Image (cartoon, rainbow, N blue to C red; front, side):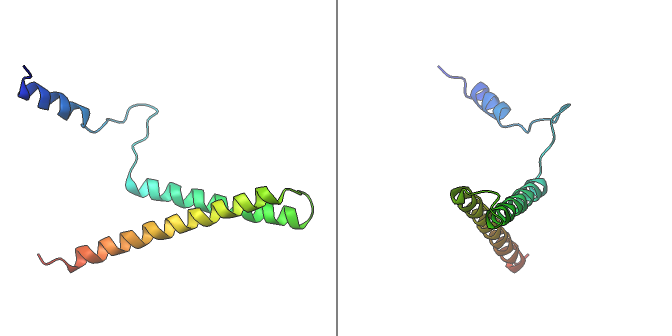
Length: 98
């Protein structure tokens, strides 16, 4: 037979917030967004650089340039979608009556 008190205690232990120790950064939503923005920005820079190298004839692999360009495009679309959802959530909260 399962003791319900112990089962709940074990379950609650699994979902406790982790303490940040040495070498382990605490992540926040703002840091996650900043990292996503930096990654999208870097993808855009990589795509632009690859396009310049293709135009000057320094690389001949058009497939790699296309992949980098599409990766940058998808990263930007994802950031725009997240931004739109954040704005919608903010507007929804601001319309709430207290």
